[in-house]
Length: 170
Image (cartoon, rainbow, N blue to C red; front, side):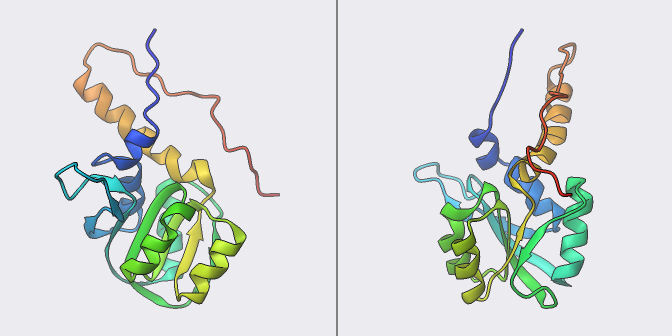
């Protein structure tokens, strides 16, 4: 039995967790929000930042919920504004908040953000959408499972059926 748990490596990889979040909002021209030093490519790094077709936050929230198969998100900041530049960070986005603000992004999609970070983002004019930590990462597993099955013909690929979001909305 082999168990593969890529976590952070999947976050930074092309087609990985952050690209799945970027796909959820149809981000184009995406670049790493924080490139990895010394890697020599513009596509590997933490988070993503790029253009989105002009849309209201509410429209993007609906896309996010469908793409991630979730029913609720947390939004901090203006919800009726239109967005053309967005940043994403799977999991906990606090470490990349300054990068998101500096990028000029109008929307920051992440799994979770501390209260004071959300207030700082709002005061910088950034609308934040939080999906909960594991919801921001779990959708990438479907994509990874398919890619592994294509490349590892004859190898049984099983995704955990017990992994669950620890938080529930009631």
